[in-house]
Amino acid sequence: MTFNQFPSDVDATVYELRIGRDKNGAIDPATLMPATLPDGSTASVDCRDANDYAQKFSWIFAGAFGAGLVGYPHAANLLRLFIYSNPALMDDGYLPDGINAFPFSCLNCSSYFNDWLSHNAGASFDLAGNVTLTEWIFNADNTYGQMAAEASQMRQREKDYFDDNIATDLLIQWGSQPAGYSAWLPDWYQIGPWVDNLTDPNNGDLYFTFGEVRVLDHQVQYHANKTGPSTVIIDGYRSKGVFIDLYDFSILATSPGNWAAECQLGYGNGNKGASTCRIFRDRVYWDKYSPP
Amino acid sequence: MKENDSISKLAASLKEEGIAEFLAGAGKEFSGAPRIDSRWHIDTVCQPSARTAALEARHFGKDAIDQIDKFAEDVRAYYPPTDSVRRCQILLDLADWIASETGYGNLFIAARCHDLAAVEIGRLIADAGLPLGTGQGLLERSNAAWYAPEVRAAVLNREAGAVLFRAHLALITQQDLDAVWKLGVLCELEEQNPQLKIARQGIPPKGLEPWKDISASISTSFKSHAEIERNAAFFRDDPYNAGNTLSETWELKHHMRLVVGLRPRSFHDLAALAAFRKAVGYFPERAPRGGHPFGSEGEAAFDEAWRPHATPANHTTYVRAWATYSQIQNRQFLDTESRR
Image (cartoon, rainbow over all chains, first blue to last red; front, side, top):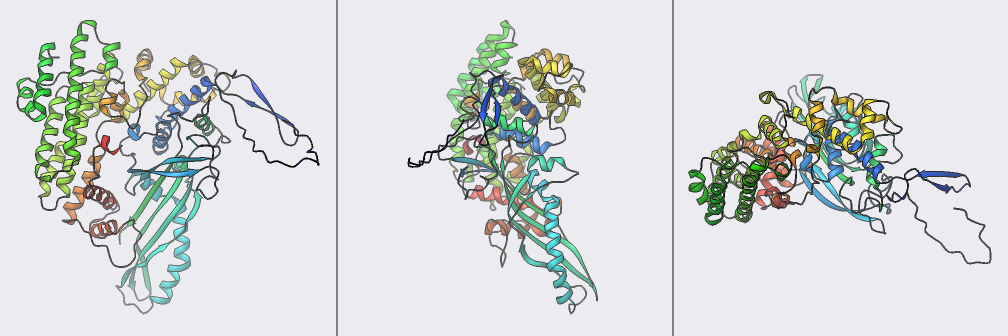
C-alpha cells in the first residue's frame, strides 16, 4: 500500500491497520501477495492453503510422536499437548499434574509473555487481544520438574550466590564453632526472579522443551559441616523453585519451528476455533536435593 | 465370542440387576465377558458373518458403560468411607471380569472401572483410622496383566486384521508399540499426501526436503514397513476431545490410546500417598517453624516429615503425596471424567 503526503488543511485521524497473512483455502497457494513496505520497497508474501497446512501439520505431528524428535521425549510430549490440548496422548510419566485457566493479553504489556508471542494466533483472541489460556502444571516429582532441576542455569545462579554470600559468612562466622557443628544455610534464600534460556550442550531435550523461561521463585539452601578446626565442607544442598513458560512458536524461526508456527496460525480464519495447535502456558516446579 | 442371545441375556441382566448383582449372578454364570471390538474394526475388518454378534457385544459394552456411569455417582458423592471397600471391590471385580476377554472395548471399560476405583482407594489410604493395608491391598489389585504391552499389541493386531505389532508378542515393549504407531502415522500421512512418499523414496520436491530425514529416522528399523504401509488407514484415528467421556467416544476410533496405555495416572498419585504413609506413619498438618518456600502450610509439613526418609531418588515423593492428600480432603480427588 502507498500513503500520500497528508494534506496540512485536514484534521489528522488515527487509523489502526491490522495486517496479517490470509491463509484462506480459496487462494491459490502459488499466488504471492504483493506488499509495499514503509520504505517504498516491495515484497511478497506466499499464501498458504489447507493443503499446505496439512503438510506442515503432518510434520509437526510426526515430530510429536517421535519420528522428528527421537531422543527428545520431553519435547515430543509437550508438542503433543500443543497439538491436541489433551494430555491423554502423552506418554505415561510425562502427564501434567494439574490445570489452570488464566487471562492473557497479547497486546497489554502488563501481561506476562505478550512480548514473547510472535503472532496473536494459536488461541481464540478477541478483538481486544484477550484470551483465557490453559496453564498445565508439572510438579517437582514430574519428569519435567526433574529435568528442569538439572539445568545449568539454575546451578550457575546458585554458585554465584554461594560464592558471594555463603562462603563469606562461613569464613567470618564459623571460626568459633566447634568441630562437628553443622547447619543448613541460609534459612532459605531467594534467588531471582530471573529470565533465561534453559540450555545444555549435552541435553537438547531441555532446550527443545522449554527454551526461554520466566523463573518466578528460586530458593536455595546449603548444608555446611565443620569437620575440623579450620575445615568446613558443604555436604548437603537443596534447590527449589518454579518457572512459567509460554508454549508457542515463532514464524521467524528456522524449520521445524516455523512449521509449528504455521500450524499455530492455521488457515482460512486463522486458527480461531481450531482444536489443534493451541498455545498454552506451562508451570514447572523443581526441587533438587542432595542430603547431608 | 458368545452367541447373540447369550450376550443379550448378559446385557439384560446387567441393566436390570446393576453391577454388584450382575457380577454375583449372570457374570459368574457365563465363563467370561464377550469380546468387544471397536466400531471401526466391525465396519472395516470384521467378516460379515461375525458382524451381528460383534455389534451385539458393542451394545453390551455401551450398557456396561451406562451402568458404570450410574455407579460413578456414588463414588463422586464421597459418602462416608465405610462402604468404600465394597464399592472398590465391585469396580475391580467388574474390571477383571470385563478384561477376561481382551478386546478393544473391554480394555477401555476395564480402565474406566480402575479409574473410579482409584477414588475409593485414595480415601482408604488417606484415612489414618483405617489400616494402610486395606487401601494398599486394593491398590495392588490395580496392577492388572491387561495393561502389559503384549496384551495391547495383540488387541491392536486383531483390530487391524494384520500383524502390525510384531509377531513375538512376549518380547514386545512399550517402545516397540510407540515406534510401530509412529511409522504407521508416517505411512498414513504419505497416503494422504503422495508427495511425501516421493520425498522419502527419491529426490524430495521443493519444500519437502526434511521429510526424508524425519521418515528415515524410524522407517528403516522395521521389516514390517510394507505391511504397515498396506494398513495405513488403521493409523488414522478420530480426533480427540479432552472433555469427552467414554460414553461419548464409544463409537470413535481411538486405537492410539491403546498404544499409549490406559492405566489411570491417579495410581501414581496413590502409590506416592501410600509410600508416604508407610514411611512417615501419619499425615502431618502443622507447618515447620519459620518461613518456608512452599505453596501451603500443609505442603511444608509434608516436606518436613518426609526429610528423614528422603533420598535423592525419592525426595519429591512428598509433593505428590501432599497434592493427593489435600485433594482427597477437599473431595477433589476424582475420576478422570469428573475432573474435566
